Amino acid sequence: MPFVEVKCPSCASVFPVDKTKDVWICGYCGKPFIVEKALAEYKKASGTKDVTVPDTVKSIEYLDFSGCDNIQSITINVQSIGSFDFSDCKNLQSININANSIDSLEITNCQSLQIVNIPRTAKIENIEISDCKNLKSVTKK
Ligand SMILES: [Zn+2]
Image 1: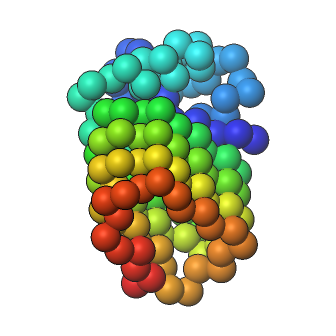
Image 2 (image 1 turned 180 degrees about the vertical axis):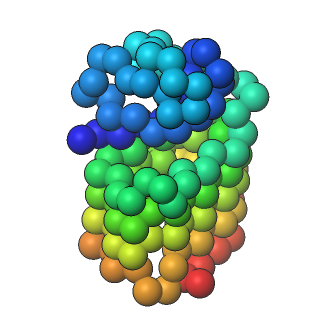
């Protein structure tokens, strides 16, 4: 199930949904919305700077943040991650991941990115970081 971040058109809450579904019900306000529309809301939402995926989400198979210019920091608290794509996030400064396992992490062309934190105990199959010229540290904490 490919998960993407969306912004609820009704209450403006931000959370991941399965993008193969056409309609989803907001867990915050209970209103149904069109996934495509909520995704578009999310991508253009200039107010969304910090994204947190809460630990109530146990696992994420696929999360695509590519081209989300407005996001400055991302915090992810889940047990397992399939594939993450952070590409071309112009203003992204920090990525904090708390997970036990990560299959694939791709971070490319994030020109503002300075810090990536990954837990020391995490099992990581594949990590690719390229074209992030301001990256100062990749820390296993
Ligand atoms: Zn809502």
